[in-house]
Length: 256
Image (cartoon, rainbow, N blue to C red; front, side):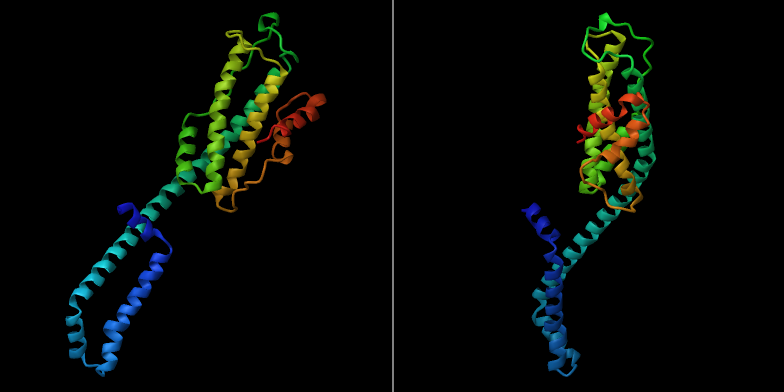
């Protein structure tokens, strides 16, 4: 019952109905008695006295509605303040995610030239020293989770996708990295590297679209990712120039 009442009060029609009730009440209890009595305050007071129980009910209802909307306004204000704080942290974190993606692009480009084109046993190939994996500050995940709670629907979905992709990507890359080091049985070839590059390109493009949202100067662009969103990122990752068009094409066919 309490949830039903709360839902009714949150309806857009409730303030309108309440305003109508207040207007009708004011006309019935103040304006009409004053007109009929020619402004005789004693007569107006006698009308109020006859309708005392009704007046008490209207006053109690008014107090309840005003209290509800005041508390709702206070909750909205507090939520708005927290959302702005979370958005400020996100604005500080987005460049770190972009830098992380750029470093990963270069990492993947460096191992792309070392691994075979077709799957072979890792024991059959000898790789030079493998660079360390780029790492994302752990606090980034907390910032995204906090913003997911307060964001509008479209950027909320984008941040949720980015967070999920980051967690999946880091887990899978850890296995790939261990495979390169020969500490597990995972086979790594150029197809594996390009699959990871597509994941990073998606994270990069979705993150890039959040900058307008955090600056509040544009609505979030929820249109499908396009070649223009990832092409420069792939080209700057220092993959072999002779294979660059083919690599860009591969990544574009795997955009979410």
